[in-house]
Length: 238
Image 1: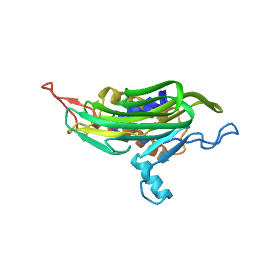
Image 2: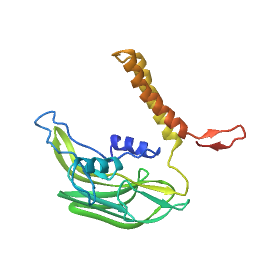
Image 3: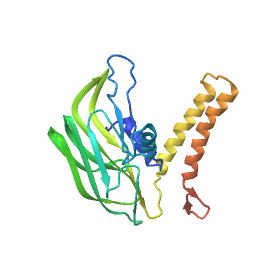
Image 4: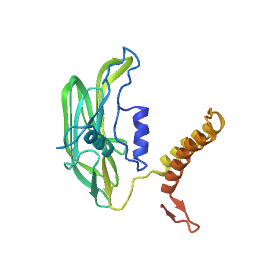
């Protein structure tokens, strides 16, 4: 769960984008088990249906897993919800549970990409629990992740692991945004535009323009979040 792909999602969330944890398998060969990676969504007391499941996914009340079953709350709030705190942050009760048929070695609480609490079982346990009062400084996002040293083979080796969607923390009126990460996103998407304009095979001009607009709109969205410096040296964000 501490991988490049996961940290790319962390980057988006640290720029203020609320990205649900969703994963699944594609059956490309007999070596890939269907449901080897899957998504669970919390639908509360709604009737089980595609609509209730998809609504929960869109709201971010999910976790994705290759084995462990997860439960995670912040002050009783499940993933997808927002917890309001004073401008300077505050203390919250965080509860996370991971259970699995295979032994789990680590359960962690992640705040803005950094581990702020963990429980470790060197030999592995089929259940790990965190129930702690944690201090959160400022706005951000908080989630739980679990991982086992044991490996399942999905064409390639995959550790038994799981990751929840985030509970979002709003401290005062401050939004979550890291300018350096915003610059990285802009640079990455500008590379996409460059590839599209110079190397991509074009179906037709209209299709090219439609795809290009996806990139340019996204770049504009991040640029709107970037702080701007005035002549007097002060900065502000939109």
